[in-house]
Image (cartoon, rainbow, N blue to C red):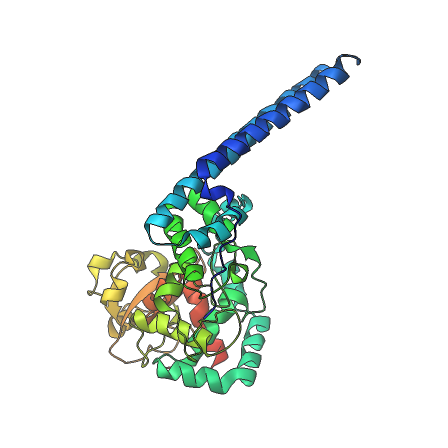
Length: 388
């Protein structure tokens, strides 16, 4: 387990938050006064600028003032957060080590509002299940297959789903995870759209460092503030990540048993059924896009893990879906197993649907978007010819 950094004799500015905020504001004001004084000396010897140049200068000054006000408000917000973190038991040494490194990362706010899982068509999003990703997954199994199969089996999860999640989250660890986690989460918490959620994630991230599970330098993330190859949120890290190799730390940043066990444990904790698959692609009868849609209450009572996902619509037996004209993608009859399934309709006009089983809901707990969960299932099928 990593040891926390020793406190130094130098006091962090955020250890005296209001003094720190006041200094920031005062320094901004003094810089502004110096700038204005310098401009006055120049303008006294120069011809007055054209009207459009004067307008640009006024707009620049207004933007600079807005930015200064925002920066000061962010510093004040961090000072308030520091006090709350101390009350939750985070050590002052940890806070003094982390908080001064935080800055606003405004680009992540725009990214948060344009998640591909929600703004893409099914056809476009599902292109993520492509030849390159499939071949990379098969190569991973050639290199680490024995370990992946063994660890996944210990948690009662088919290994292909664990591998598929890694493929969708970070291209099996090949995608660079380089964002500064604490700045990303603090920015999203301060933004306010999902402020309370990210505020709690910031507390969790600090706890990871405070407990010596990772150093601040290790805590690199995606723009969404998720950690490592499998993109766990900090709160999921604390609840469900596994030190499978018993070396005293949880390593989600390099391919190994901790990574595999953590994904499998996540799915198992949400009721994964090892004797079932996720679902399947199906063809619809003429007019099925409209006629087959129904609210959840019109069908069978789904598994508890699925009840909160009401937009899946009605759950019916495979026999009932067969009678309603739904068929496998190749036109053959549906399986005869006694399983409940919900029908997810693809893009309008493509006459394509997906019958999903209760394991689909476990994947949705990882990322609550239909397109994402379908991608995991489809990639898992491509990585293994065995169908459950």
